[in-house]
Length: 297
Image 1: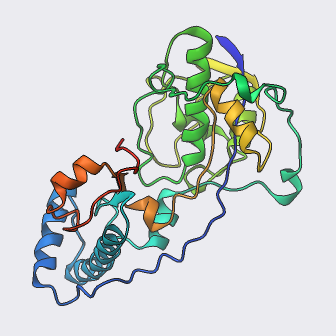
Image 2: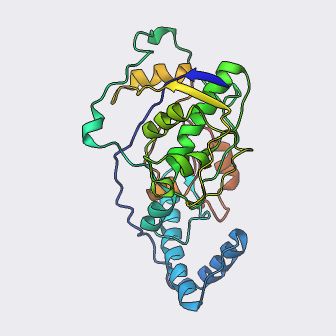
Image 3: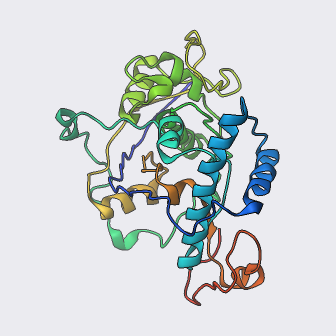
């Protein structure tokens, strides 16, 4: 079993969007019910009864209004009615987020920062850890609020790759089941998870301890595939420090993913693609990207 020392970044965005679901009134649009039916078929959504379906249709209408209004008013990115389009913003936050910020007493603690003396002039212009083979394929936490576990594991997977040359998918479920300081699907903090890994002397592979996306499983920490010797926090409110850290290795972070712009995000805007797609259902006619806009992907 290998042992690695690495840096964890905990970055919590504190921005708050009102998430007002207001745009043009779609309530009387006769095609909206049919559009909702198509969406249900695409995502396999089934409701318990007619009143529940009617309630979800109203939520769907409001979300589509927000999406179309946003797409019509900007040229930097596109939103879409994805699998989250029939739940409210509050429901999304309750089901699909789970970061629990550190208590005030813990925020001032210092873990050291090994890249403090790195020169910004010596850093590369860009680093994509995916192309360097240090990032596993996208994983889906489902309806378990354990983003903290996925963030922890992704960072460990990256440092294992950089240290050994092997990319190994590690177990989020082991953290959900066994990290008693955090709260499983009810949320947690990456710092706590890293400390658990150190005390536990590692994590199992995803193959040996597969993800179930639920609490209540019996903890089994008998087969560790990789571990760490500690973790460090990137200094708060320091973009230069963050730049130094991510240039050296993958880091762990938390973002506010609960607002509607994040929830329905599809892609950045590409001028050529916008021109070709300006009449599709998901993009309002007449909207174009500026020539200096960001490329898609």
